[in-house]
Length: 152
Image (cartoon, rainbow, N blue to C red):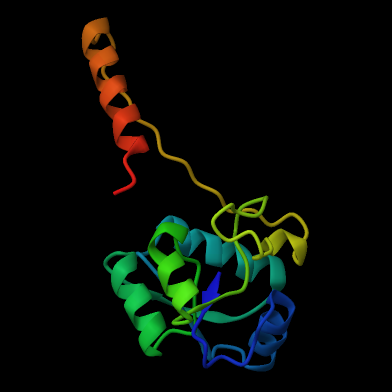
């Protein structure tokens, strides 16, 4: 959960208070309707009772651009896309949506620290059709593991 630095909040409780004092005036972006970050924000709205306006984008990159530029006040973004902007101060991280803190930003609390029971995590999987030859599965697995270890 990251905000534009112009928003006068530094914690999740401050954000909730500000959003409740200004219902419908906080815009949150997402990578599109139904995208994981859209669902994370909707869960946050339901669990906290805040009223924010959803602004769907065609992907998270343009939403992050508008968070930095100012049309958006909050984004439940992907850490890989946001971490450099957080470190540079272009956006302010209030919390992570996972159940535990994340190693790249260990000082950032979880939303669940302030909103009991909140967690919005995602994972990705890779599948192959039934009866795919074992040699192909092993070759793919080898390449996937190599790719995951590549720092680029």
